[in-house]
Image (cartoon, rainbow, N blue to C red; front, side, top):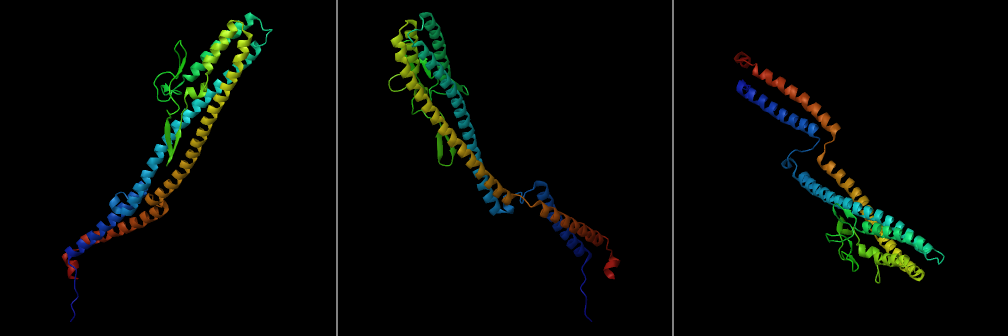
Length: 299
């Protein structure tokens, strides 16, 4: 007679509990994925994905650094461009006044009125040259003081062309986000403030020849100003190009990071539902196993 092996009450209970624990663990994992939206919660669960996620996260962090540099450069260049537009308008007004006053028929009293306006325009230009950004001089390079100062003996410019405020706006790409007042308001022979002083003196002295002599230097200095503004514009274009390029890269990296880290929510919900049913079944089996008696084992 062949004997039929029987599973003991304790063995059946342990087997049911083991299945229940396994079912619980799988359901807990599914619930965690649905609630967090992530494929794994600990790197040890998926080392390869965790390593790739770390690399991608570092790249996104670097892009954030570039983004901050882009924002700073954009602000610096935008404010500088606005100031240059204001200065250009003042140059045009000064040239207009000098041209009118250079007419020999212009009266001395009219020239004195023009002189007062020229001095006001000179002071406005100096104020523009001494503009600040975040509490620091905008056109003085690395120098802490004003970009343009009248020492009484002449006009002094702070900062040098080599004082470039570099901002790294993309991998391997930096841009100079500033320009100095000396590069904007002076050339190799003179500066606009000195020329305006000369114009003012000629107007006060009713010196027609002196007034006429000031027109060409001021026009030449306007060309210098426009060239500096064009340089700022070229830098601003580079910044915007870098911003667009960085944004495109960020989208690509973010998409890949999502593919590595994020679960497919539809699949996750389906798995969660399936495992919930399995868990409930395991609960039922465990409950029945715990209800067995010695009489059930003898049957």
